[in-house]
Image 1 (cartoon, one colour):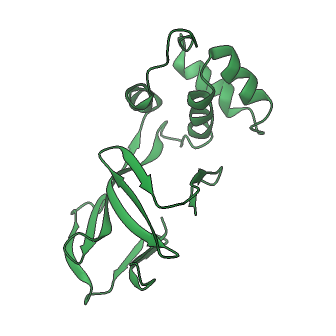
Image 2 (spheres, helix red, strand yellow; image 1 turned 90 degrees about the vertical axis):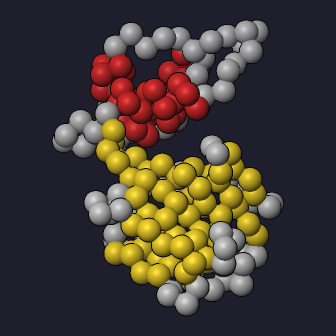
Amino acid sequence: MNFVLKNEKDEILSTMFQNVFHAASKTVHDLAISASANRIKIWSEEHQIGLEFHYSRKTPSEIEKIIQKDTPKIPDFVGQPAPIDNLEGFYDELSKITEFMPEIAAIGMRRNDAAGTGVRWHIARHIGDDGKIPFLDFISCRLYNGGKCVEFRDGKLSTEGFNLGFCAGNTFRF
């Protein structure tokens, strides 16, 4: 895992490169790292800039519960997504597709769930030998890039003029 956490002046507060964490001690207000190092919380300046996240490995059925919880309810005139009768088989089918378009789009349209199918395709491509997926859960985050703020709190994202995109490399680009 890699990240660089900067304040609004573009000064580096903390970094993680290849899972090695470093914090600039003069700027840290609150720092907690769990004994298993799967949960990190770092905030500076009375919670002005920082992040808190939890890393774990989850099964496709655990991820499916998260997708179901996080998926907004679709109006009835649009139609509800088709149920997945065989989750393991569906993930296996998705894992064999190497290009996102047009196959994934066609499956998403057939299921009436283009976004969920796209997420599941990314998940299927990252299932490990243990049958689990690396999962990074942002509890809260507030950071700056180019003088603009992006914030995740309570499952909501707010930005100041950013275009935020999820790409195949599983990174957020600003």
